[in-house]
Length: 150
Image (tube, rainbow, N blue to C red; front, top):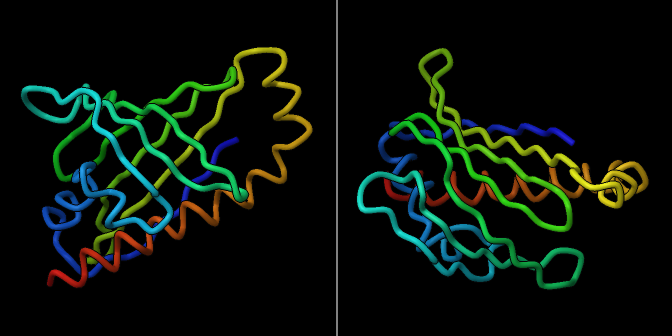
């Protein structure tokens, strides 16, 4: 499954970057996140930052351990998580189009095991719509936080 969503944000790239990289306050800034626990903090930069994120999805608490694998200041960061035979890659990216800044979120889930591939084939269509809804809500929450600081 591959998804991408984006929203315009009336703020400069540095202000957007500051909010999306404030992982410690993600549960405050994003309504869909219940809790964040930072597990590893790199000495410099974002690459290597690792945290445990808890959300309520489909009425159940779900916790994923995520880490930043790649980043370029004021442009993007990429995360990885692995669970139940699936590798999850997500990216938060800031771009400019026609003089306006946009924040996009992309998400890819790649099944690695036979069981995960079967579940993906059977349930993937249901998960796609729900995942898109969660992604758009996260982006709207971030937009609200960033624009309220301007």
